[in-house]
Each structure stands twice: as structure tokens, then as C-alpha cells.
Length: 263
Image (cartoon, rainbow, N blue to C red; front, side, top):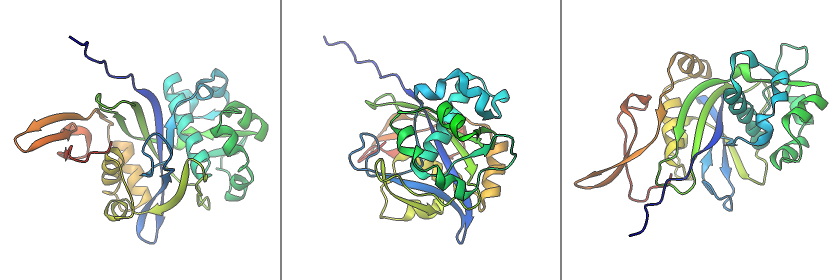
């Protein structure tokens, strides 16, 4: 008898929902993943990725606004969210050392050459922030959701979602490698647009975000809403198998057919 295969351990990861007010009301920045990426290839997603060793560097704490309210894990996750947001969108939540204001769009643009170096882990956040005399604005992040990839998936992530207001004037642009397109889009319109492939957790979090009409409302709602961990599970009904999530997680009652499921 073959031994039952154990689920793979989920890797810590972060995702950032950068929001602003546009002509259609609330908009969120999203990127289209390159078709050769091994996770969510070709899908429309929020910027994000797994925590790397540089995000766990103890020296990073001295370069982070809001670090005093974060333990080591929380700090690495928040740093990862901002780093991934910068790598994939060019939008950087940071302040000049000694300043209370987020950096300007022009300043963010001038840092563009750092994006591929951070993405390739050629340099880490500590080196980047030290050389550019910047501090990560982790105090601007608001916890939004926490999802763990289902146990039946071969590649699993323990993903923390954050929402943050995009700094004024920072418009975002995809990196051309991991992501091949980018868009500011109303969450509900993204779901209804047949041009996009959207995986299950992204769709659920677009629905959750889309309950707000403005960026201010989205942030205020996230601040007062407890985050419930979501580990989707499969249930079998008479008419097939469905993916379910906890009813108290803030998404309503969800049963997603496993027919053609893409997680």
C-alpha cells in the first residue's frame, strides 16, 4: 500500500492591494502575470510574492516606519508586500529619512533601476534603503485578508493581503518580465471583464474590496474588520465537488465548483 502523500508546507507570502479613486470610483492596481511564470501564469493578480531572506534581515527593522508595532514575522511580511509592490508596479511606499511625507512620483521613478536588482535578490532592502536614505512606510499598510493555499495544491502559500492608498502621482507600470501588462481597474469591473483570467483567491478578494465605493471607504472598512484565516476546503455534493471557505471570513457563503477550477 502506498503511503499517502503529505501536503506541501505553505511558503510565507505577501500581496498588496494598492488603491486610489478614479473616474469609476475605487480602483486597484493589478498586473497580468507572464505566461511562463509557474504560479498563476497569464492571470490578472495583485502584486505580491513569497517572503525572501532579505525581508527577514534583522537590520531591516531600523529602516521601517511602524516597526515598533510589528513582530519579526509581521515585519518580514509587511516589508515583502512593499518590496513586491515596488518590483511589480514601480509604486513605492517609502519616505526620505527624516521626512513625514511619502516620496513623490518623480522620486519613485528615479529609483526604477533598483526594481530588477531587488527582484533578482542581487541586493536586499537594507542596502537599497541605506543607499537611497529611505524608510519603508509599513505604517501605511492595513491588513486585509489571510489565505492559505488548499492542501491538495502542489505549490502552497501562506499569504497575507494588505491594502494601502497609492501615493499621489505614482501611477504604476508593470515590470515587463514577471508581469506583461498592468491596469488600474474597479474591482467589480475586473471580475466581469472576460479579457482577464482571475484565479479564485483573487476573485474573492476583488469581491470583498469591491464592496467599498472609494479608497477611503476600503481602508476604513479594512481597519475595523478582523481578518479571518481562509483555508479553502473541498466538499462533495450530489451534483459535484465544491471549494468552500469559512462563512465568517467576510466573503459571504462561497461554494466554487471544482469543475475547471484554477486556484
